[in-house]
Length: 213
Image 1 (cartoon, helix red, strand yellow):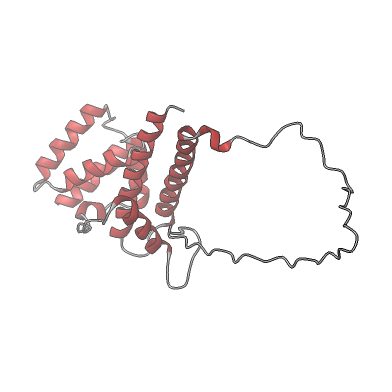
Image 2: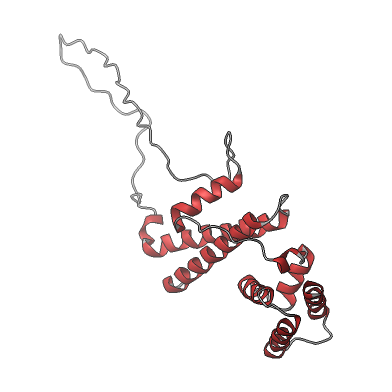
């Protein structure tokens, strides 16, 4: 795979992982399992792409450099003949102490005492992306959207694009009146060719009506 394409996919995955992680932290407990599943799936894809990028950067690292066609050693090699009057003394092998290497990279998948998954993920994220800014207060409109509705909107209205979903829900939630929100929703419908009688569109319209009363 082209190196530039790999790097672009890695950047996109890092953005998605950060966005999903922020969404998890903003949720009230308990967090739905599907949110963790989506986050773990993106982490798995990130690991695979980083592994492929490593191959692209150093293709010879994974080649076998063992010499070819080397004749096998004899099963019973000849022993050296000691000189007369010389008594060989067996040498005691000296074991070198093993160097203890400290692995400073965070382990996301092995639980440790007093550390849960979110804490490890937060530590890993801060090492790669820097400190996370303070999470905003949950939007009122978001709290009215159930998990099932959320995935219905993402798949049916935003073609599976989580970023587009979040941006447009935040925009709708920021309006001060029902007329402004409905006008924006109608422009979204025309722009994305949504069916005005579609299940997902009608459901989002119903939630907006409840939001603004």
